[in-house]
Image 1 (cartoon, rainbow, N blue to C red):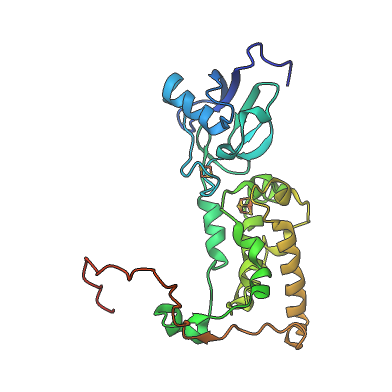
Image 2 (cartoon, rainbow, N blue to C red):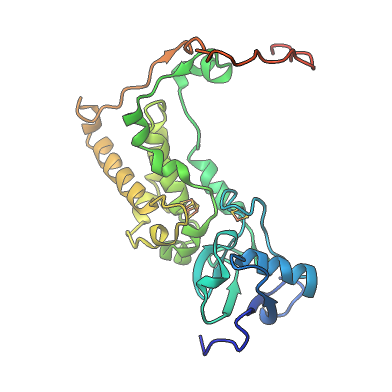
Length: 288
Ligand code: SF4
Ligand code: FES
């Protein structure tokens, strides 16, 4: 970046513009964005451009509070959540804004996420309990879990599926069929959950070409993750689990995972003084 812009209350946005099928090649367009308040974010800057300077700019966002993961993009070569990054983090006042690499561009800053979610679906990102199918489909009780069992996977459950880890992954850059850090991290998130019984299924999915063993631990996924999930660590856990499984060592008591028991939910312990819930205003859905 060259010297700081002249007006400290104006930011220069150099924004990637491209619509495949319509534009011959990508280009950059420059906009001047005023600082509307001290904590103004990159996303607010882009919305300012859309609302005041150029309504044709395409940018994806939803929650504006670092929860939905849809505003992930790159500024000055670094992956960020646009709604969670303040303009003051760019003291030069100049921002080159680009879509996430490793994804096809739909338009401008919007990328196609189909493959990302396909990979996520492949590892079955939910509790698998074939032996408790009826309970899973029509829950009547609850799976018990101790706080220390929750700790085993809690960090990995903070993922908001923004896709930044995949955009930073050097293996995805050379092998688009690679499952990618997000899907591989999800394997550890569920396999380490004491309520889940799908470990063998998921190990089979990832112990395949374009799977677990294509990760060479570059760590770029962990570095870019805005939620501190650490996919690189999760992948190493799964590699260890896969080796133990292949050597039948996971059957040893030391490594065996016990499925959390199912139990009736405890009776609600109402605090005194809290009024009862109001009467239903819509009829209860019939049991299917
Ligand atoms: S692991 Fe982190 S970077 Fe990857 S999708 Fe989840 S939140 Fe985003
Ligand atoms: S808009 Fe939801 S994470 Fe940024």
